[in-house]
Length: 456
Image (tube, rainbow, N blue to C red; front, side):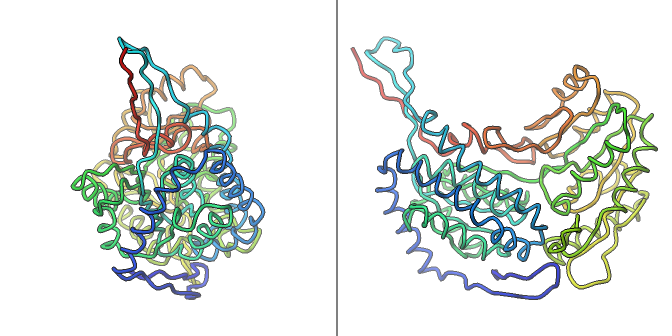
């Protein structure tokens, strides 16, 4: 495995990073385990101070950090700055709300003098993070667990080696001990060995289903807790709207953000038949009008995909869908220029026999379906292996809410899609993984809910 910064807007390799030797991996594990003994005893007030300092650093360095990930994975800096502000919010949220969530809870004594539950750390953890939201994904894992008192070993995506090193630097500058947060460049095989090591007490992965299955299997074999946030094929169900053009423009913006590379992006647009033709036309126009180009250009709305390989996979998915009988309204081809660019695509006519019906398309591609009633919309929305999030759009909020409650997802929304905030749970069901991040739920995944009972 190679850790390398290859600018997806130019194809130029700008920097490479050496992976650790097996001996160095063992040193990391020893350091993390030793640091845990002391970090868990650090006062909650001191850990809160460090989280606040971390949040401040992300805000203070926002321009620099945005340009860094733009070079690594192609995100336009304005979008990267939005990610960085959310990252800072997460650290601040746990600093503000975390201490109260960790207070002891007195239960009904049930025949004893007292029965009290405490939430304590469990030990060193491994985090395996993806490239699409480099800072935000790490914050979801690191902020609650550092507050709790767990130590962190962080394996980021190979294309995010530079930003992951800066995240480690920021944590240390904020006061987190050097060995309480360790950034590592390791192979997948070494990551599996880390999970198996008795010093590691849990693993959190955000990534593909294939990676999630491998991590879950290794963790289960060694009786380790795992949290998996995997892919999604989110439904955007449109029942009615007073302004099809505005709704389609919003849908296009949501789908094309981060070049369509978001697990909770709206990917399948399920539209009432009365609006379908107009919506497809308006969405196609919005996709054709989206400025594709250098992420450094302020006018760019859609940058490159994260790599040429990622771009080629999406282009092949579109090609295969058309070969199997789908209708391509616009785009879908690789652009004839350096870098990992493609023209945003709109597909219709997808049927259950086609690959595109069930697979996740992780790029700037919208699939649109027509339905005649609410029951058909729900059936279609739920007829995939994924269950991350979904949304229902209507002027009739009661009707939309009733439909949203029937979606087999971890996050159901009405008249918005993809909202993520520090105090809201994030996670899915089915092939989208298990466990929850953010809010009180993220603080509890790797906590020992410990009973202390004193007899009369």
